[in-house]
Image 1 (spheres, helix red, strand yellow):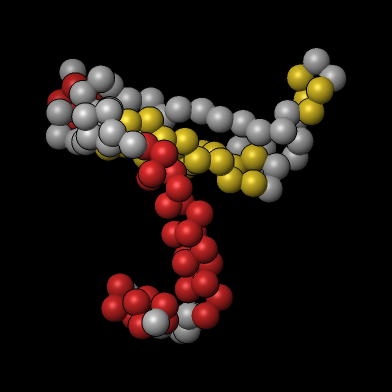
Image 2 (cartoon, one colour):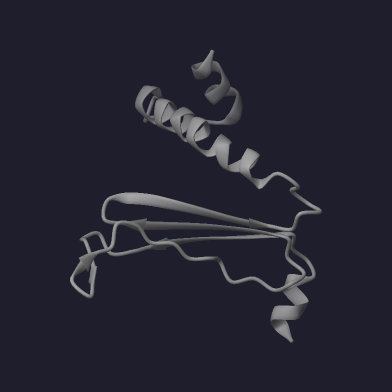
Length: 108
């Protein structure tokens, strides 16, 4: 009942799961990648899953076609947006809080 109550108040759910940071094997073969889908009820239209495994980060997106008719367009933005975050992390002043205007100023 609680899950149903809260799911009616949300349109998206995201999760970040730290996975094993060493290679895993199944039947003698090394697993190159891992993936999972964020648990969500039928009324939540967008799910973003983030999983780290063996020094890499994997993202998954599941979306209602009525909300996001081209989910590949969203996925294509992940790389460039993370490049911006990396740039901000490397170039920012770690002694002060970085707000949105400050981030935009660094990107200019």
